[in-house]
Image 1 (cartoon, rainbow, N blue to C red):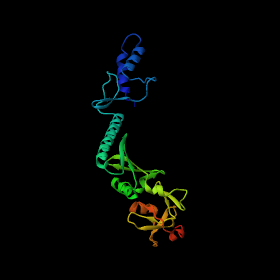
Image 2 (cartoon, rainbow, N blue to C red; image 1 turned 90 degrees about the horizontal axis):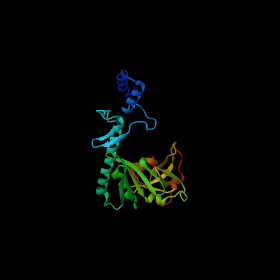
Image 3 (cartoon, rainbow, N blue to C red; image 1 turned 90 degrees about the vertical axis):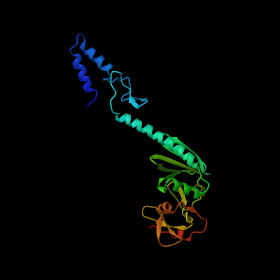
Length: 249
């Protein structure tokens, strides 16, 4: 039911006892009380900032509701989220500004954006661990990897520029290319993990995910699992006999 209806009915009942053009009197009274929709004005509630928070724009004769409406609460929640992001920017800057990879940090409304310049793959692995980024949260282009995470309850986007892994492998020269989470791997080459172990391509599973084995052993793991558990991976330039004999699993 229209929340204005009870007030409109009360006003109509009171004005029906008047003299003269009763219909005109009632119409102007309803309009003055803000109980009619004006097609020349925007539909929906309009909010304004007050020292106490967001409040609806309403005629002086119409008292404000004692409790915030859903729209007012949403606006207040948005303000609070943006404020938390601004506060996190200060924390991130004071915590990481001295790191050699750190380029900058800024708030984008309710999200914090951290920019990094990565020159060593191990450094990117360290940032992923520190900020709680896992492989499936990565997307990437040829020059930047974007990792998404949260710090507290604030969403964070981490932009890592010039990650060495992306510079080493390109579509044009990869013999067995496979892109995972925005990063291109050449599976014709052995892949070295963060613990310096070597993985060899051994075909694919039924979903098309590459399978690799450690040092040529028979046990095979998916590329996604290896990257999540012992990544990042980067190619090494030794010959790959095991990779050429891989079969689809």
